[in-house]
Amino acid sequence: MIQGKTVLAIVPARGGSKGIPRKNIREVAGKPLIAWTIEEAKKSRYIDRLILSSDDDEIIEVAKAWGCEVPFKRPIELAQDDTPGIAPVLHALEFLPRYDYVILLQPTSPLRQADDIDSCLEKCLAADAKACVSVTEVTENPYWMYTLEKDGAMRQLIQTNDFFYRRQDLPQVYKLNGAIYVANYEWLLQSKSFLSQDTLAYVIPWERSIDIDTEKDLQYLNYEYFPKNSKT
Image (cartoon, rainbow, N blue to C red; front, side, top):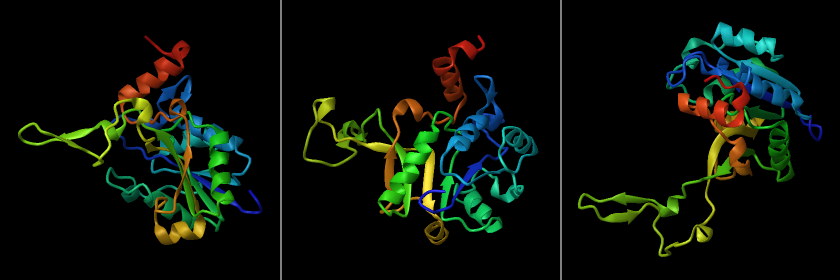
């Protein structure tokens, strides 16, 4: 609870994953990928209830073993490749009591910390915003990107009269890192999205923003961050 407001956190983890088979329970430094998110969420000072939304029996058992509540099993039709990310959240809200704030924590962001979760929520409340999501600064700035015409002519991706010759002069640009999504409960039900023109950004450093989407991402995480646990 924060400032008298109740907080629900949802960890979505479907069984199917084409990029990395059984991704959510693959081992990272000796424990399942999903366990990293569960552990940090349980350290939060504000989360009143932490639940898993999954269609997969094995993921459900793993989550329970790491202390995450599983109040229902997600319908298979909401666990497809083309299922919108908001769908499991809205489905969960149908089954649970009303909370003041909802937090979505994707297990593919294992390095986000409890302090990140709490700070993102604090920022949302301090500004009386409807939503706040985590972002990280991009390493490849789009102000240095171009499209090519058929004749090979270069066209700026972002049209501007300015030319930036030094990296230090580039405008700072950020991208969603998928780690934390916070929203007011009632607003989320109406908007059906964490993102709007009024959504605030909470910046997380790139070293805590790795998003596990491919086998290479998983290998990078293990070898760069946990070399002693990596198998050669």
